[in-house]
Image (tube, rainbow over all chains, first blue to last red; front, side, top):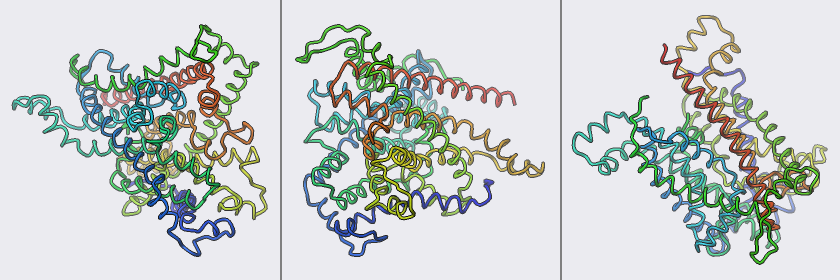
Length: 269
Length: 300
């Protein structure tokens, strides 16, 4: 039982309404015709329409934006988790030369401002011929996602008793076999949480994704900013595109609701 | 916690080291390289020594004045949002329902703003605050306030601060909630027997238990607000005038807009150095707090 403060129902209700109102307004607008948006102020769509959504799903320049975004986000998640897993095990089980410094260095990279890296990344990935591919964005996002994955997974690996490792090695398991057959299944939920957060932070980032792509790999967030300003503010379409970017997060949030604080706190709760 | 010393563990860490070094150290070397050179274009560079740094740190020069103006704006912004979000987050965490489906529902709604792409956050507030098509702007204008975030400095600031509170207070609340949940019931029962007041319970039990998560919350909120770019860029574009141009926005303008590589590089390094120092201070405080607590618990 947690002791709470007087009037808590009112406080939490008001705050939740404050959170939902702007989102509701976006959803509301996405179902209105542009004419209705501009001419009248209505709290819900008077003539609900799916035209904006239909346009996004049929117009190639729109839906490829979603595919491009998903592409680099998935690549990034796979890279981050696979390099972070062994490192998390090492940090959790052993002490080695420079381990504390390395851990701090990783943290400092999670905090590095994207604006600082935008230009050098542009040069780097142009030089090695990856510019405007999903790989460029995926690798660039590793700078904050790999440290995050290491920090989250380290917490979960530390939750596995060390006796399990020792028993497995006594039973003749080799290290790779122990890792895949025993450790990974034991921390499956932790891997899920880490993957979710890598997915999320890569999905919400715009500056690097926009700087490192031009045409072929343009992410949805960049499509939104460019197409709309060129078309002279198609508000309904903009709103519909925005709603569609919220959906992936909203869908998976249910599964990680109990770990959400842990993920945002770099695994330190 | 007595971990075995094993230098072979480096092999397990090597992939992480390689990936992060590739995307952190390599680009940073380019920045260092640019920061000490000047160019006339055509890829011809010549040595400029610490010239850019001198100009950057001299408030009377054009570059220096822009840098310091955006730095102060950024610090002011971080201070304001911390002063609002931390107390508000604690209050929200304390107001969370105790059990049942409401807990899950609250957690999901609270987390929702955190998972929205940052430019969409900007778009949401850009629309919401407009006087013609946005609910907020419409209502404010109709109750007699002359609200226009595109033309008025103060309105632009208020919009950006409210947007940040909307976007990130949940993070503080979720962290505090996680901290509160770790308090055993026995503590409260003991406090009740002692006849402790509600306020005494808060200052003697809940606040000390939330110490660590609050530290993380302040660190994350300070860092993320200090490098904020996308949301204000989408809503105000740094305007009206330069009134909401934060360091990141200024930096991107110089680096990718004007392609002033030397100036941008010098600014990047100073910016990064500030972040690194703050980060190190927090990290030291955090690990010391953790070690202190372990000592205390070990003594018991």
